Image (tube, rainbow, N blue to C red; front, side, top):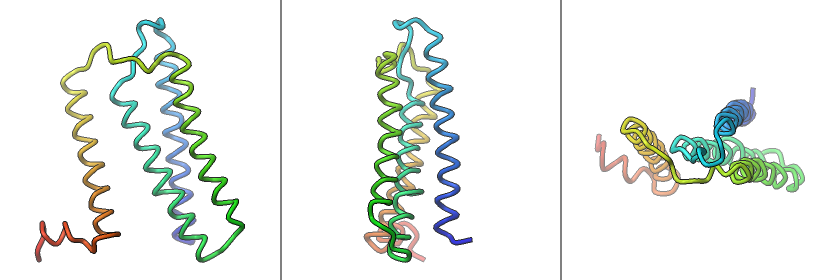
Length: 145
C-alpha cells in the first residue's frame, strides 16, 4: 500500500473517532441546563488534535500526492475546504448550544494533564518544524552525538 494512502486512511479513521468524541461531549453538555454548560479544557485539546490531524494527516499528504499523481487541483482544495467545514460545523454547534462559556470549575488534575498534553503536542510540532525547515538545528543542540 502506498505510504500516502496509508497515512490518509489512518488519519481519516482517527478523525472519525475524534468526531464521535465531539458528539459525545456535545451530548454530555446538552444534558445540563444552558447556565450549567461550559467549555472544558479537554475541548481545546479535541479541536487542536483534529486540526493537527487534518493538516498533517490529510492535507499535507494530499499535497505530496499531488506532485506524484497530479489530479485536478479542485480535488485537493475541496478536501481542505471540507475539513474546514467540519471544524466550523463543530464550533457552530458548540456556539448554538451555548457551550462557549468560561469553565464553571477546573480541577488541578485537569489543568495538569491539559498542560502536559499541550506541552507534548507543542514539542512534537516544534521538532517536526525544526526537521523540515531548519535541518534539525534544535535536535543537534540537544543531542550533539
